Amino acid sequence: MTTTLDSYCVIGNPVAHSRSPWIHARFAELTGQPVHYDRALVPLDGFADFVRDFAAQGGKGCNITVPFKLQAAELATSASDRVRLAGAANTLVFGEDGIHADNTDGLGIVADITRNAGVQITERDVLLLGAGGAAAGALGSLIEQKPRRIAVVNRTHAKAQALVAQHAEMAALYKVELTAIERSGLEADLTQNFDIIINATASSLAGAEVPAPASVLHARSLAYDMMYGPAAQPFLDWASSHGALARDGLGMLVEQAAESFALWRGVRPPSAQVLAELRALLQSEAAH
Ligand code: ATR
Image (cartoon, rainbow, N blue to C red; front, side):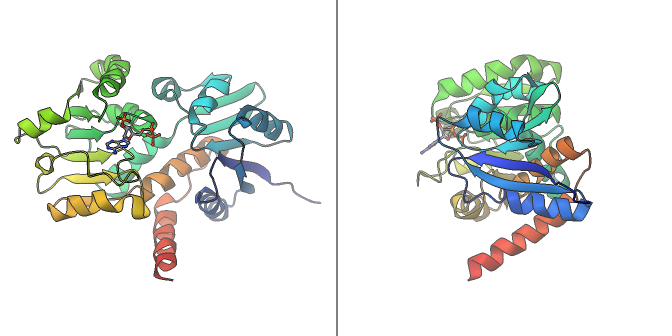
């Protein structure tokens, strides 16, 4: 008797760099789940066709990366509250009744900060740098942790205001003080510092300086970059040089994958172990 493995993939453009196949292969091995997981490089105008074909051929679900997260949210026949708030999806689940969209990015960063880094978000002051897709994907899950305050700062202030307005009702429900503040406001008031500073901007990729003054850090702040590898380094160096605890987004990557795996399989993989393995793998690759 032959067993057909349930098939999943990560869809992106580009996607060659994606570590998701490696992460999900480890999850499958460690949980004993019969899963096959591939990369799918899809043309910019071919997302919906690819997803429908993949589902028709028996695919069970997929992860979505740049630049298709908005299209994934639109294509789905049902969506979680997280997707509705973020306007973007990173996980699709194919079921009898259609395509369900979820967004596990926010759950991923919260799990990495609270469980892996052991830093509490509840009742803390959080600064979110950026107001694009990455920031939008995380904000709802950060609010659910009930920090005391979340301030959003973005180069284009109007986008920070729009993101805050979109989440205002939820923040009120969770009794979180949620505001958009201008960078000049941070620079003018050197007493404003934060327990957790999250970089959700693409400023390092653009080779630009860190988009916040060092006065936002205090000695026990956690400075978190959603990226990892060289893209995260300028922000991490900036934070370390000012005495803060610096953490890259590798754990967020593994934890969002673990949340997707749990949605598909109903089983929670040992994400901390896989994070340690992946970090060791990247270090050995960097050394060669
Ligand atoms: P992503 O999906 O990665 O969030 P995005 O939606 O294009 O990508 O958002 C990029 C974010 O990085 C935005 O907050 C952007 O600021 P603007 O809204 O002003 O464009 C921010 N960003 C990009 N380049 C930047 C730079 N050089 N300095 C500061 N912020 C930058």
